[in-house]
Length: 219
Length: 262
Image 1 (cartoon, chains in turn yellow, cyan):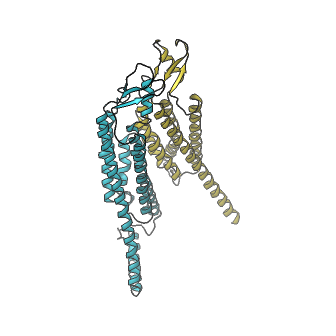
Image 2 (spheres, chains in turn orange, yellow):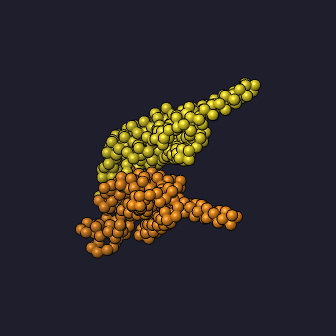
Image 3 (cartoon, each protein chain N blue to C red):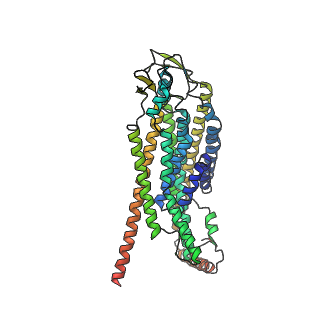
């Protein structure tokens, strides 16, 4: 079980997406998944070993690390990638349901089962709203947990068993901050793409409905 | 998800590239991505563990490492490779869009169809002309920009391409000035120079490909202009011939026999 599973899932969804949806998949693959696997993972690999406090008090480093990093950036990043890709499963399930129905009734119920219309359109729109919502939730979570997107070089820790206030040094703070900003930028890009796709679909189908009604009235 | 997946995506674009484009792709995968994964990552693997400072002051090593290496060489290269490969996706998307249009035409039973079945549409190799030419040329242009930007960023961040053995650090909390020693500086310098050299070769290949495409474009235009100037009297004959050919094509499509392209 690895990221290849997510890659296969997204490739499957790609077939039934709009143009903007395909751009979203490409952005997620290239700028988020690939950057995560090829670069970001290694930066946070030894974060605990390299976290150093100016004290010989046993347990102080552990306690301070746990206080400042309740959930590591890299784990939040991985969770975000998984959660944000999951709403696409709704579309996959609905398509599978359509194909199953056709098989069950042994006749062609839909003109084109893969076309985004009717119930599938609602599912697709819901998946877009969920994706956008989850992206925003994770960005807010990052911001709240770490007081912004900055990673300081030095943090002062005074939790027991640390004696008084102790200086603790985070490893590679600048590099981590650069990749964090990269994560935020790609997240925002994905939010913009999702909102764009949502507006495009709503506009397209409302125009379709309006034209149908207009034609009916004329007739 | 790893570099292998990138290889699959870009391999698809390879079919529609020029010969120089194919050479560029080979250089990218063998001399850059493979070297990065197989060798360079191991050289930089212990970069912080083996970065040693002549002090017992806790935190000094972390701070000095962060000061001298704001972003590690290996991560910068990984980002460079990702950004440089991305413009090829534009071409892949354009080709996919064209294929999708042809499939739609085929399904509608259009008379202009030249294919027996959908498999042929999938396997078809598109020529680089028309709007695909513009997409392809812009992708090469962006590739060049990204390569140049990353090379400059490298040069700017590390004051050249050499990795020094010793760095003097006086960032707080280091007391006074402290000597810090980088691990494997010579090996890192060798790999840095190698990656910069291959980057330069890729830039040259991209420039050559751009010139080739532009030359082809202007030659085609001058040929078209030349043809239309030279033969105004034969226009009617040409038109009649074209009409006959069109009829033959539409007949053969209707009989579902492979037609010949105009």
